[in-house]
Image (cartoon, rainbow, N blue to C red; front, side, top):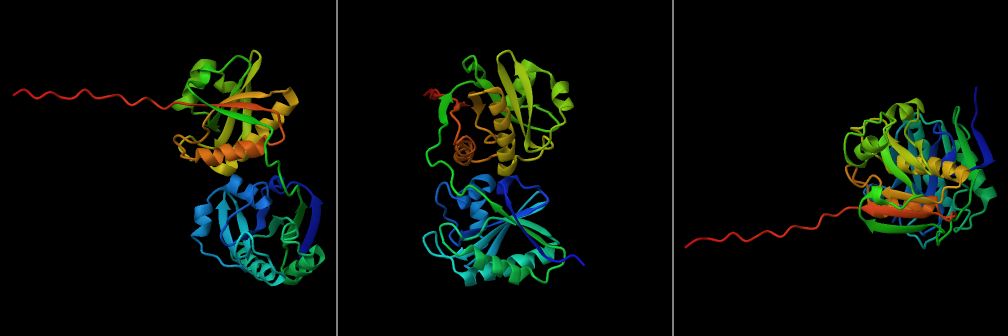
Length: 310
């Protein structure tokens, strides 16, 4: 009989295998402080309004579902500036356990909940986790030690430019979002397809949602961020985040420091540009990268008044 397992690793919580659901602690108002882990969750997963609509009080858990896993928001205090208690932590964990039972979830990754800003003692919180899950069959809780804060003032520079992405200065690598089937039948994707072609080369790279397919064009790269599997589907914030992370890894390996991008996912997919910009600042917080964001807003045409003959 497999018993409950509690493991601790030094790892980025957001990069654990997707077989793990994720959990962390929040306040009931879902307000966050920039740079904290709770803020990072809102940047990556969004849907704060949906979470608030669940009307959860301290000691409960709000839940989002993304692809084949859940994201658990353990509500351990009433407001951002309140303090979590051991009792609310235990109550929230019990609610988490019940949801896991109901949905067949056996693996969850979380930080040392409430042991940062709320200053709870990790040894005692750990005892509570053991107490709540001790009798669970084949369940694993993975504790990830993580960097609790990111740079408040990001090193990257983001400039918004009214104009055409393809008028970016030489040396700027181009970025756009695309589906894994590389349909590219409209918008920037279609323009990329017409200008650079090589769709078969992209398909051969066999990349899927949350990754990036790359083409070389002289002294720059063309980054195809794969944010959905099929063209008719919708891009999501988590898919965009993981695709940006994959692109960043390539940039670091090839010394790429200048990007030209559209407002990723903010057209047909209707993501919030403010949210996407926050995500860019988060991903490139520690990098001296210049990002030029191109957008086009047509100038309203003035209608000529219709003259009525008398």
